[in-house]
Amino acid sequence: MKKPNLLMLAVLTAGTMFFFGCGGEKAAETTESVEEVAEEVQAQDQRTSPLRSLEGNIGETKLRVQYGAPSVKGRVIWGDLVPYNEVWRTGANESTYVDFSADVTVEGQPLKAGRYSLFTIPKASGKWTVIFNSEWDLEHGHFQYKQENDVLRVESTPEWVSESQEQLSIAIESPGIVVRWEKLVLPIAIQ
Image 1 (tube, rainbow, N blue to C red):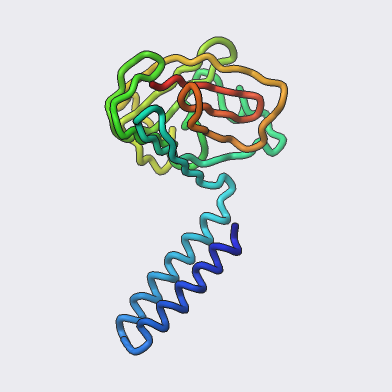
Image 2 (tube, helix red, strand yellow):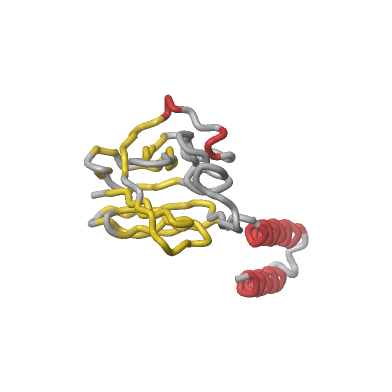
């Protein structure tokens, strides 16, 4: 993935230099912004938990999900790296968020259209709590979480499978959103 990004940057930079070659001050401003983009691309490529973004539909409703995708890396995840009975940002780095283009029901409960951070409370056994919070742009995920901003709390039953998934993934698929990591599959029903 690094090569296409860097190639695209090189093409953009060359095009910018050609287009603004005689523009003096304007060329410097544009080159600076291309350099900023290059730094941002490089920072994304160096993240331990890459930022993932996906879009999809549930019926007529468009969804967008963005999350940091950590890897297992031989660690004990559930009950250790991700403690039981504590709010987890359901990803890494900044908060995971979900954007709904229309009103939906989540596990049978209504949720208005909008963008929400997605948190979960893992449990050693039984159902997990799934939280949609109005503060969706939290730089440090659950460290800035405030329960008073919860818009919806529902429960979902996790499934434990024999095959382990190294990197966390969130998919838009039946029954709505499915979180997978290590041996966990957490389906969150959305209609």
